[in-house]
Length: 354
Image (cartoon, helix red, strand yellow):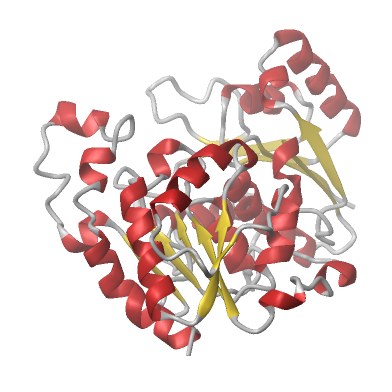
């Protein structure tokens, strides 16, 4: 009986897509034991997953403290894992792999020329480009698994496993007469968020042109920013303000009752896809669309990026300017106008809000 650990010490979308390692490993070895180590706030996307036997909770700030890292390594050693998979390859996870006592450790090579330094028995290079509709981020996870296992029937799709009680959840009766559009109005970071005035323009377009309710999604610490966007909107009558998902699990339950998701790129997009809901994604200019635009067919899952409309918008910048894009993408974001986005959003929503 094989026992494995998957370490994914990053954000919600990363944890969800890393669950494909668990799903495929368990598919090949049904009696195996699979543990997944992740930050506490991400657990909602992997709860109730039958392919994960145990979720190990870690705290980002605490894990960076040397004494806590040593304690975690000792706990990992006690588990006597056969294999540890490390998709994100941060310093803390690399050290857990190096000293965690597993027979095999699999993770990505450093992009810097410092060598493997013994972190992994199976160091793997990150794929240069995607070759599958699932997107490169998922392909990179499957590629890790393929270093130690021969897979013949790969399931590339992350899944959210709702309980029967969660599936029975209903929105208040007053909102059941129209379809609901979930709006991811803010990204997980300011750099992933569209200019507020552009978001308000898109919200007004949907409200004026489609007979539906609009439900704002945002993190608890983004309420003030969400209110700023709401106040910019001209058409407020169909915006739902009295339903809110306080946790990522609550969001998944609520998203399951919505018709579509329109959102800045981020973890909520991956959740909606895992629930088999249509998605329209707006990418920040600094994000590589090929890495994260999973399962897009232009109809059920569709996305827009500045380079779709202005292919040379970034390549024409100087090297120094390119390095600054992630820190402050607003100037480039402003070039991705609401008119551009709406030209693609209109036919997408037309298919699902008839």
